[in-house]
Length: 358
Image 1: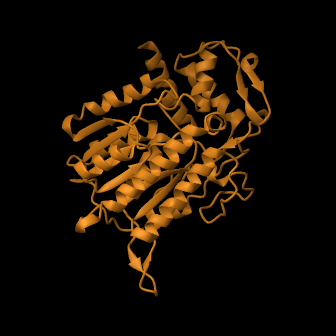
Image 2: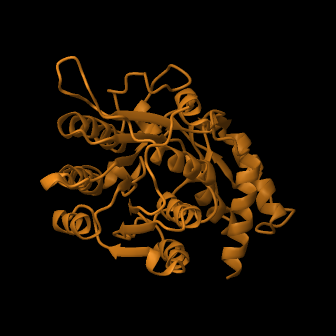
Image 3: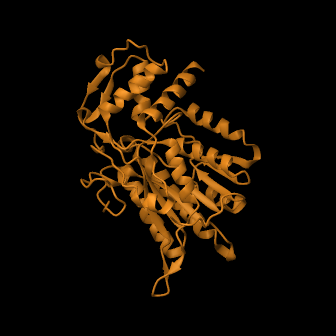
């Protein structure tokens, strides 16, 4: 296992996308576990999905008082990002701000270029200049990549050693570009950076565009749910607490700065998968979801699920299976996501019931 070389307690940590699903949960975890840290959160709060969920997450974070500072803006604004780095001087940066979703990238490509390309470039430039004039600067940049970079890779499970230069969606292309940009900046400016390829993150107060949340909304309204590839899809569903645990562990070890034989810096750069390493068939997933929704009282016990299912072909940009090889994460950080799907969906169903009752 790698030794920790980044101290989070007493540090200023910048979390972009702080009102998002992962960003808010990570911020809360940091504030709970490291009582002397300060979290600076930025989020543009786009209306890609119901912003009331984003405000619900932010309201929880406001309970931490002056230890959490929220900035309502976009990382695509260069001046805003520069100002944040100049004023708060973050020691660790976790870039989670991004336009997510494979299908949305087909109809709204501009949002992906603005947030995922320009926004990430602004973060990299700010990290670069954080070392100006002999300043200590950013000790570790951690950023969100995605399992989507594997595209239609046939080799299972997906390994970070696999070639991933054939993206099948614009979203995947932007995430791969993040990894390439981070590598270049790590090489040129000795910025320690770690990319994390997340695999289908789910849980309470998650993203409504994700299947488990969208299915639930439709079933509650009595609408049909569409199951793609006729149910022959498998996903490596990863519970939010496992994702956050992985991120916090990774944050505390920055890739080491060292020089090569030519005397020039070797890029302090790493990429890890964070997934459950246990792909679930979509039809099995739907069965567990419906059982937990009934258990939580979200749906009645006599709900006719069969009449509300529609098996349809694969959507453009989708892949039939995602499956994470997390061996490097286990070896370097002693951690492997392990929350069972039923446990995670039970927690979601109970949250959904409580949320709807509000």
